[in-house]
Amino acid sequence: MSLLDGRTTRVLFTAAVFAVAIGFLYVARRTLVAFLFAVFFAYLVDPAVSRVEKWTKGRASAIGIIYVLIVLFLGTFFFLVGPKIGHDTQRLTQSLPSLLERVTSGELAEQIGAQHGLSEATRHQLGSFLASHRDDLLRLAGRAGSRVAELAQQSWLLVVVPILAGFFLKDGRSFSHVALSFVHTKPQREFLQGVIADMNQMLADFIRAQLTLAAFSWIAYATFLGLIVRVPYALMLGTAGGILEFIPVVGPLVAAILIFGVALLTGSHWLAVLIFLGAWRILQDYVVSPRVMGANMELHPLAAIFGVLAGAEIAGVLGVYLSIPVMASLRIVWRRWRMYAEKRRFGPLNEYSFLAETTPRK
Image (cartoon, rainbow, N blue to C red; front, side, top):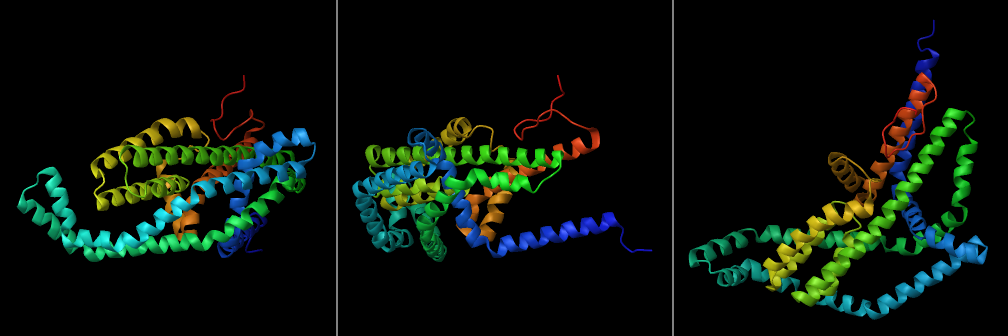
C-alpha cells in the first residue's frame, strides 16, 4: 500500500513548486524590481503610445515618438528647475548641522517660547527635553541620510527601466497570448484571462492615479511653501513631497515630517505649515485620492500596512512602493480563484470582476 495517494502527491508537489518559486523571487528581487518598474512605466505611457500608433500605423515608431517627447519634456523641466532644486538641496545639506545645533543648544526652544509667550520655566523645560534627546535626533538624521543614499544607489533604474519598458510596450500584448497558450481547459483559461484583465486594469489605474496625486502634491507644496509662507528651500521640499507621494502610506508621512522639520528648524511659520500639512493630508486622502484612484485599489487598511512593512523588509524603499500593487494583485488572484473553484463545484456562474461581488444571473 502506498504511503501517499495521488491527491496528496499532487498537493505536495504544488506546494514545493510554490516554495521554489517564492525562493527564486526573493533571491532575484533586485532584478525583478527593475522589471516591475518597467511594467509600471509601460502602463503609464501606453495610452499615449496607442493614440500615436493610430497616426503612425506602427507600434515601434509610436514608442520612439513618445520617448523623444518624454526626454524633451524632462530635459526642459530639469533645465529650468533642476539647478534651483540642486542649489536648495546643497544649501540645506550644508546648513543641517547648524540647524540641529539650534535644537540641542536650546536656541530653538527660546525662539518658540518667545513667539508664543511661554514662561521662562517652560522654555527651560523644553530646551532640556530637546538637549536630552540630542543623540536621538542625530541618529534620526543619520538614518534619513542613509535612506537617501540607498535610494540614490537605485539611480541605475532611470536608465534600465525605460529600455525594458520599450520591450513591454512593443510585445506586451503577445505575452498574455503566450501564457494562455499553456492552458488547455476552458475554466482554467477563463480564470487566467480574468486575472490578466483585472491586473491590467488595476495596474494602469494605479500608475496613472499615483502620477496624478504626486503632481497635485507637488503643486500644493511648492505653492504654499514658496509663494504663501515662503519657507526656505521651498522648491526642493515641494519636489521631495511630490516624489514621496509615489510611495504608499509611508511616503506622505515622511514628506510631512521633512517639510515640518525644516520649517521648525528655520523658524518659518511652522505652525501655519503644520496646519496646512494636516489639512492637505485630509483633502488628499479623503477627497482627491478616492476620486482619482477609484475603487480599483480597494484594500483593507491592515492589508495595506502589512504589505508596506513586508515590502520594506524585503526590498527597502522600492519594496514599500511596490507593496500596494502586489497586495492588490494577490487580492485579484484570490478572488478569481474563488470564482474558478465555485465554477468547478457548482457549474458556470455569471461574469465576475474583482471589483464586485458575485451577483445572481438575471
